[in-house]
Structures are given as structure tokens and as C-alpha cells.
Length: 201
Image (cartoon, rainbow, N blue to C red):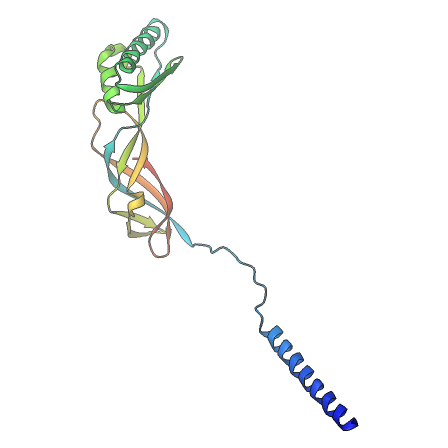
């Protein structure tokens, strides 16, 4: 009987040893706690020039009258009357004014057409002291020559960035192609990171 108990005791001890060994092995192989960190993209500041093609003038037209005295009042009243007529006949979607400033939203007429209509409908004295501006849509070329740390590289313009918007002063001789200054962050593989900064040269 004692021999039987001894065998049972040794068997239980053997199972316990196996269990403890397996647990220790499992604990040592469990993955350590890790802290996730966001990847940092290495970029370089680059500047280049390119010709952009104007694709449209579908944003709000801004009009500012700087005339003083009687000429200023005359110009403001005349523009108010023109804009009201355009709104009533559905040529513009919205129209608002504040003092000597106007905001006119395009509809059947785009902002450039509205500008041309107002410009031709006020006196030459009024046009000399009235400014017009809007946001134009500009298409960029497929590639831009850019300067990165003193080196010139050819940077591809991805489709998502090919169409850009730029603030423009309107005048009577608006070209269809305009020179642009383009600043952007460039990654190590020569691609544009984020959105570029674009202005008219």
C-alpha cells in the first residue's frame, strides 16, 4: 500500500513539474507589450514654376469700390442696380453688399462673365476705382521642375492635385494660361507630400 501511494505521489509530482515547465515556457514566449508610434515621413521643401491652364471661374465674384464722394456713391448705386437685375433674371444665384463691397454668386453666368458685364455697364471713371476678384480653377501640368536643396528635379503631379484653385484679380486681358509659383514638401522618392501652395507669379 505504501508502495502504491509512493508511485501515485511520484506521478502527481511528475505532472506538476511538466505543468510548471510548460507555464514558464509559455510566459517567456508571450509577446512583450509594445507602444505603437506613428511613422514620420521625411520631406524636403521645394519650389518650382509652371504654367497653369485656367479651367473655370465658378466661384463668388468680389467687387470693391474705392471711389470717394459723388463718384463713389454713383458707382455703388449702379453696381447695386446691375447685380439686382442679374439676380432677378437668374443670371446670378446670390448677391449681397456691405458698404462699398459686393459678393455675387454665379449661376448661368460665371464670375468672369459677371465681371465683364458689370465692367462694361459702368462708366470709365468708375472702372478706374473698382476692383474685381474671384477664385479660378487652374489645371497644373503633369510634371513640374522643382528646386530641392539646390538641385533641380522633375516632380510628377498626381491626379488628386492636378486641379487647383487660386485667387485672381480680374482685368480686361485675362490670359488662358498663367505662370504659377508652386511650393511643396517633397518626399525622398520625389512625390508631393500633402497639398502644394500655389500663387500667381
